[in-house]
Length: 60
Image (tube, rainbow, N blue to C red):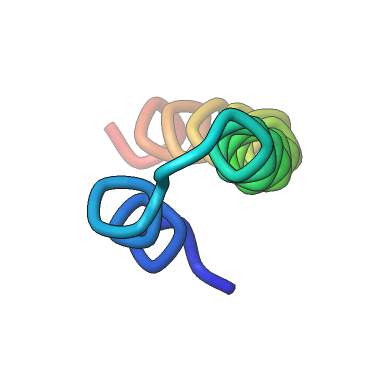
């Protein structure tokens, strides 16, 4: 289930504390998964940026 679906379920259907807890746990799981993907992109982007700058200096 994607984050927005979980958020909508929470906003529209949460009527007891167990359901609310489940929704928050599901949202946290999604945020942690997104965070993992973001973290996995940081180093490759840094390497590509450094390479681009070094190539730019070589062509001047």
